[in-house]
Image (cartoon, rainbow, N blue to C red):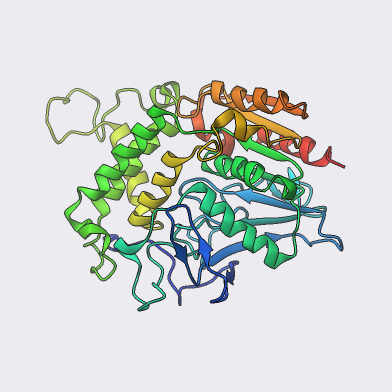
Length: 388
């Protein structure tokens, strides 16, 4: 039986099953000023919560998702949620972030495609998708939108803000932009400013999408199934997938094995290696649940990430971070190397603040923070519960 054709966009749209999402939309008089020097109106944030907010709102924890994540941190795949929670097994009663004790919030970022305002969302002027009209947004802009959500929820100060990869970028922006609203932070496998190599990887992915003729300059939302920018988005994901794992893991899992053969016929151009099929699978999988324009918008925000921008540089900006900090790195992570985590730890320690570092012992590379819950979970639990 043939697979259904890929949708032009895997974005969540109004009318789709809501699942566990909740929505907060800024009223017309409360526009969101963003870094490019314009304002956005009618900004919606899709979010999910677990646990119960206590009387003085002191038990709230914010989780920040990575590039292609969304608000669905915990819970099964099902109606409204094409995949299980991205930190399933870490969030819940008695788990690393214990929802019997804490009120946990995760919001889909500004520019995302799973309910928050992004390129696939209706533009307030005409109700048609933003598409090419969507502005460049930054990690700082994402955090500003989250701060409005926190106001709506009645949370003046987060007990802790936690996130990995791009989520860790949001964690650091929270600490620098709103230090009075953050009790503690846990940035995982991230950086205080994007490096040249990280920007290089991101630019290759964006080029893959924008060179796809079906991208149509960003205005492809009325395309028929199968006629969207799938090749570009799939290629971008394939590039990224290589950076999420280590050489050892790829070698151990795939070696030089060929698809459907014993390896004796390796000279035909159409003959594929098993690792190629693995990457193609992940490319197609992302196309079914994500949006090409959101991939571009969020990737650009990651490349622009620099907590020192317009703040007198990195050292000056990081002097604002005086709350307890647990930084976590992964020894095999070549996308966000350990030296970047140690830099964060040392800069916070220089402020006289409690600053700890934990290193995950895993061959899995960058994605180990999502995989190695037996190591990550206890460190999260100890840190969060030590803040009393």
